[in-house]
Amino acid sequence: MSTTHPDSTEQLREAMQRRRLIPLWEMEAEIMGFRPNPTTQPWLWSWDDLYDTAERAGHLVTMERGGDRRAIALANPGQGGRPYATSTLWAAVQWLNGHEIAPAHRHTSQAIRFIIDGAGSYSTVEGDRVHLGRGDLVLTPPWTWHDHGSESDERAIWMDVLDIPLNNFLDAPFFEPHPEQSQEVTAAPDESVLKYGVGQLRPAWEAPITDRSPLQTYKWRDTQRALANLASVASDPFDDVALEYTNPHTGGPVMKTFTCWMQQLRPGTHTLAHRHTGSSVYMAFEGHGATIIDGTRFQWSAGDMFVIPSWATHEHVNGDPDAPALLFSVHDTPLLKALGKHRSEAHESSNGRQQVTAEFVVGEG
Image (cartoon, rainbow, N blue to C red):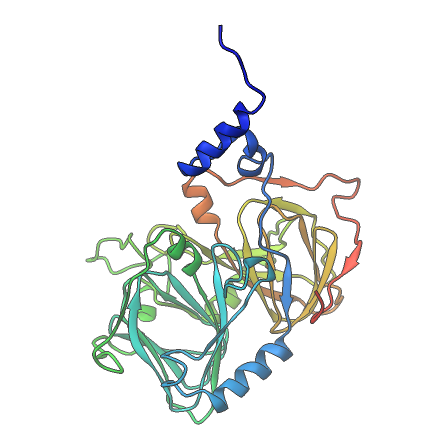
């Protein structure tokens, strides 16, 4: 029969510390929680602040001083000073001066850019150069050569989103600069758009491209038409008229670790509230409205960017009775679904919506 001494538990703890061991029984609730407890905070960055900062950087920071991209990252206050919008997504505003080139490189992070205003700009991915306009979505699959440039006197500005936090967490980052500032253009102008832009059709002699989307750029004119068509026949109670950009050959998301949406909130729409695992970064593309996140109202207008953390209850409001509002967003849903960790549920209340208890104020907190 063993005898327990009064100090034996403390001695055990000290021995475990020396051996780099930690007792589960003292921190089980911390690491195996009953529900998600994300460090990412709901937050909003105003377009006025984003544009002002990017414009100043455009005047002051050369490509040589700023590396090969003049990008200004959203730093969520819950991410401990790291330049991350959420725990899985890096998001930024990038500024390109007229007749400037952002040099070619490649990396293992998956990337997209959404063009806010891109008159005269272009993007070249693996030799395929596509000229860009407002509202276009550009893909950069992992480890593909890509560079960006401008043939105009005017600046271009866009939103970047990459899975850098996830890539770094997995200890899987690789980066390589191209030996030349611009890669050789080997495809016909806008080739991927001309070949694959009608998603339900593809060249009969080609096998489906499944490892990545064959379509490098999703043109705004096509997205706009699809939104109008969908709005005339169907909507979702939680997101109203929402479209997911997909690989036209598989129907799957444009990236393996995140997906992109374009969403229309019809005039006067107030969606029902819900929550789901996985984080999201939004940009208000047109119009104005509000998103209520865990009881706090985040008022937004065109150009503002905001974050919804994992498992945060949220709903969207378009208070304009005459005009729709448009939201572009990026979600890490494919990652959660691939790992079997995606879950969602509707908000339980008499009207399906939250009680607003606070208003987010830009610059405070």
